[in-house]
Length: 449
Image 1: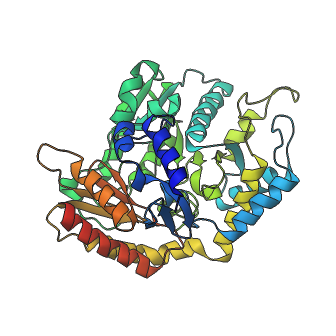
Image 2 (image 1 turned 60 degrees about the vertical axis):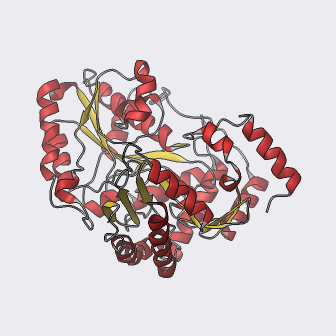
Image 3 (image 1 turned 45 degrees about the vertical axis):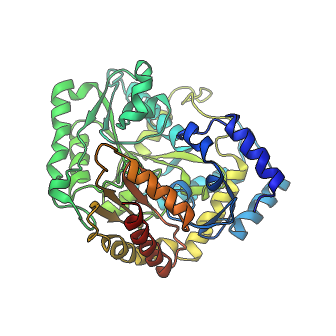
């Protein structure tokens, strides 16, 4: 626990708003901060400043599948800091970045052999959009400028990702800064047809035809790329209907449009495969990644592209910079060192296969809550799940907030967005931990609802 003097200083600074927290109701938090301060983490648990041990139901923010304070990662950070703590990536490189790129390409779908590093999912998405624009321009199709996102999609908070994203609350304040030429597919979630589905719903494949409508409206010759999450994570684990992603691929291919999979959440094992592309049997042209690649320890993100895209850029004078884009910390030595250890541990401990083994356990645990009257829907795939609670009359989001706060008191760190609760537990979780999580949820839902 935090010492009383330190706690007093933290509370004073928080109440004065010195630290302006992201995606947070800052005024509400300042009025009730103490239970929300995390002071340590180990394995699948956080510990709060009050000494409460909290099961990490969302792997941090979808990013710590190996749990916290893994000794091999801790040692890798120490060793790399002593050896090469930073190396410029412009015109220079280091062995860690080169070899990590090779390992990531080996995990990706066949034909996707080139990796460009960024530092977050938001940067990865903006990089992918720039790759798409540059690719078409080099091919003499600079008129392809439009980007197609999807309703309820989350692609980070850069201006590009925000523009193609489809979560209203993330967009409305910044409407004047949106990219030109962006349109959105209809989302696939219709609870009247797919409530309480286990895995992929069979209804909704036809929603892919909405892309045909947009191609007809704008003309294919103006569209550069379509970007979707294989599973929409931040909006509450929306699982693609059977055949939906395959149909998007067909339409994109037929019209010369690049298909981008945002795999910031689904990449590196969350779907029980290296990437969601492999789980669903669809190969895009570009994959974005972040989060789990370094277990959330050191920020890292990036894009993986096909041979066709990479080779298209490798033209013109050899002395020319082919892609005028990058970040100071692209391929950072610390991040690369952690990325290597993460991939080592995943391979040696068989954690991707473990996700497949835990998938039915999480499925049964979550769908076992169906009998509670307040539950409106439950859905799952891979080691992800979510449920929606019926809103309290006139108070949307109140039940989700109450459940979140009850979790802090009773050993669960929950991710509640409105009245939707999402789950992505660590790959190292035990079957019993997942069952205990559901049992505690049952008690808390009954208590607060």
